[in-house]
Image (cartoon, rainbow, N blue to C red):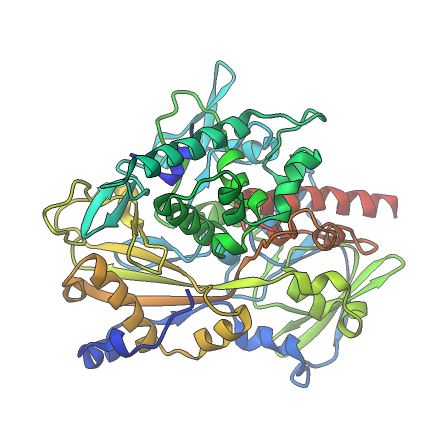
Length: 540
């Protein structure tokens, strides 16, 4: 059997009519809440600055970090590593973390976004160093890192609901034809081959972080076609293989495979060849709160420098650095910080709204940065989901469905190894990718908690008939700009490469600069931007 994550070691929502199915009154009173980024405050940046008072004071700071997602936290972490503490980090929301944020209830902690981290590849030197400091890597044996056992994803890991039965792995193998089998094996062999190929410049063809990939044009040609076109170019026509790859692209990039760069699609399979001592078959790192565990630990190091509920409204480049205006809505005041250097760790669409020269005359590359909305729901259950009794796969950490438009669910309590009558939390993911991001974003934010609950329960009912009787609560988060899109031409096109350039002493640092919403990319940009900011202030 095959699992997509085996490689780590070797929809816009439609009308709600069908979702209500007589359970509307029950759903209307289903406990839970809506949460998400502080859009009410963040939308001030869309034009109405009338509620923002002018700066009432000024302060000088050597370095300002704008954004408290993984990239901003990584920049802060590495400034501490450089023995530098004279900086401030500004985050709009109540908590840092971005799409790696997490929540908690009486049953478990749970992720609101990113929920695992592959074992880092050999070239991810800075990331391995971070994991060493966090105690995730406990030592080395024969040159290979030893990972703390409790942080490695427990078995069983993956299963797929196909033709009414839960089956091991994530590829729909049951009843497949010789063509399905042969083409799937051929695809796997090619991905494993590409993992080992080095470019003429000595770099891996598909490296992680992205900037450590080879510059050979033979690989970059793949960015000019879609992942679907790549499959067809290789005469891989199996509908089972196409379903699997389409699911992977939606899950990893927020777009269908005919809208995803083939370079990006292949990168997922070919870039992550992380090695570890005594590594089990499918070794990757996860926690009940997903990557929120990493966020929580990184936050501790910079607690004194972090300012939450702090909206950056204007960044003006100056000869000596940048003037950063920050609005504190709870205190109804604005402070101007005169910074020697800025690490801009927010996404590109935010940069376009706060950098003073760009608001009136945005650079051409801005429009190329588009984002897929996502919905994430955390469902608390009495007990564990019940299956049909005819399945050959028990409840796993990652549970997907061939019949669903959602991306399935992970079990937050999986790492606790609970069984029987213990309550549990399921984290359901849904890439809202069937319509334009703008239209989907608008519809998603207009839906009530009851409407989203109806959609979530309908999807779970297809996987586990009768599950609604077990549901204690449904908590929902809508990420309006959840994941950067990587269509053909974006990964190695002029717009992304232009976005990497600094603006004076403003150094950009966000995973969207890599075209992939990955912890590894966010961390790399945070690390490198922190080093550049330090160098800039030393130059004076």
